[in-house]
Image (cartoon, rainbow, N blue to C red; front, side, top):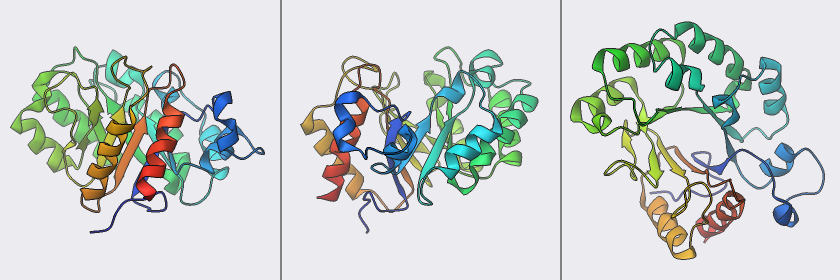
Length: 247
């Protein structure tokens, strides 16, 4: 079994966004845009801003052109689709979104579908949405549900059928939601910070345990995204995990 590392094309380590806290500047090159400097140290990023507002196709193309060939982007599906339309009657919005982010080309590594905590599983709605998405997009995609009704065996079967992974979130509002689920062809760890979500840094012992787990897992495309960005903890946490994965 091969061990994921920074240089592995199947291990995508990064943060939700590429903002560089000033105290982290010494760890990055001096020249270039923030994205160029970020991509010199980390091989992936999650575009979280796409959840809140659309980006022009030319913007995605510019981002793709500014990073190395191995770099990969994960893009969060807009809240209009997941939180406002709640996966219903949104084919036009999906087409618009994919038309934008597809300009990343081969550097589009994954789509992140985060659902609101109030959205319960409805088979007809979920099946219709995921099948429509798969008709338009065949790359990696992961689902981050936050309602317990999405944990049933029938949901797992649907995710397998549509080749959709389930996010391993920390902290997770769902029992067992801290481990990857769904289709096993992609793993996506989304680390929000604990105990204070979005703010807290991770302790060394926790990151060491995570590194051991990642090294034990099969050679499967794996994402590990730090989303504890509110107080600047994500970047140093990602760099610490990067160092642990090298040892």
